[in-house]
Each structure stands twice: as structure tokens, then as C-alpha cells.
Length: 45
Image 1: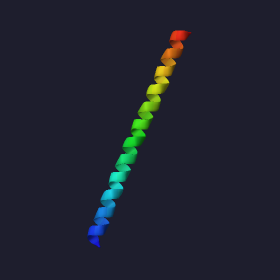
Image 2: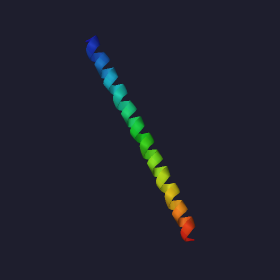
Image 3: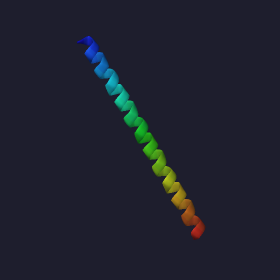
Image 4: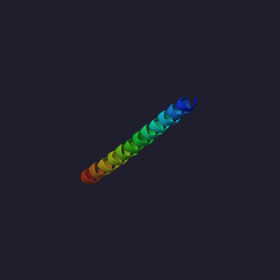
């Protein structure tokens, strides 16, 4: 039973890390798009 719990905790930590990593990448991508679109808007005006 202990081994099962260890595996569960380990897989949960892995999933959480992946979610946090994906969330960070998503935020960086959104910020990059906002900055790029803002720069393009400045050039056209």
C-alpha cells in the first residue's frame, strides 16, 4: 500500500509541475503576443 501511495504522490507532483510549466508558457506566450501587437500598433499610427 505504501508503494501505491508513493506512486500516486509522485504522479500527482509530476502532473502539477506540468500544469504549472504549461501555465507559465501560456502566460509568456500571451504577454509576447500583447507586446508584439502593441509594437505593430505603434508603427502603424
